[in-house]
Image (cartoon, rainbow, N blue to C red; front, side, top):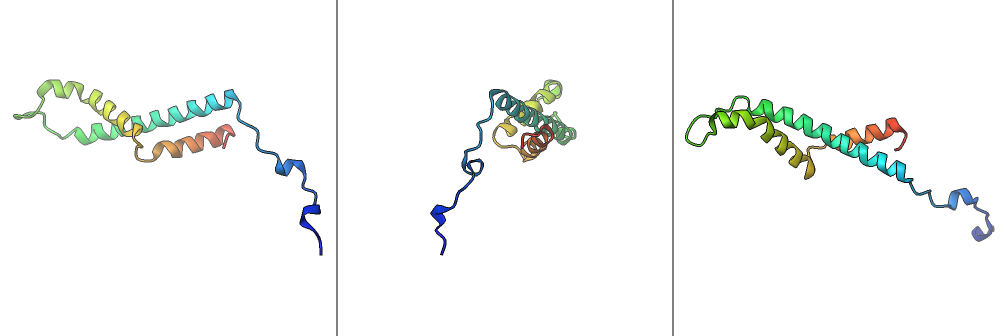
Length: 104
């Protein structure tokens, strides 16, 4: 019967993985921001299309001012949506961008 404690395990299998460098961490942060910006842009375009048929007239409408600033409003709403989790586009884009950069 062999004793497991007597077995020799190569150090490469027991050594902890190396910590990522500062440059790699910066690149990962930049990729994450880019993916979030992409999702925010997508959501903004989607919401602009969604609001295209909404009338701004009536007692509670904003009139011409609302029409002029609707793109600013949709941009702000889309950034806030991404900030609280979004719809799942950013993590997928981030994962693919990390693969392309060889960062997993």
